Image 1: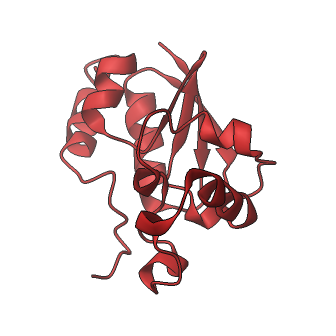
Image 2: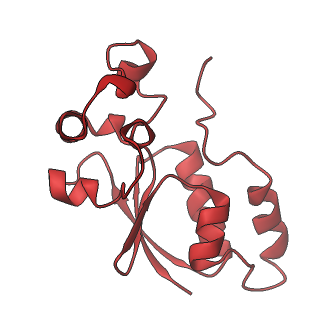
Length: 143
């Protein structure tokens, strides 16, 4: 069992499902509001590792959908400034277990990192149902 600091947008459907999946696997989730956290460039960038700047952004953020912000045309320092100013731009969730930090909810990465096995037989159907869903793409996203 891992204790996960889980930065979310409160009310986000997928963040709610992601937390349920983690809890069904026996993990302790400590949810924090991504939008009200006091981010700095250093603390925020620590979640992104070697990912390209384009992978840092929430593709359903209004400024991205409208074309106002083009992540493929932004340097890392500018991206961090924009995200600190407008946390809706940050890809969710941000997760931390110990010293390791991750952005987004890639099932394979999460499973390899902390495990996603049900803690008991009653949790197995819940976990299996959640794993079959798209937990990364916002269900409110309009293409």
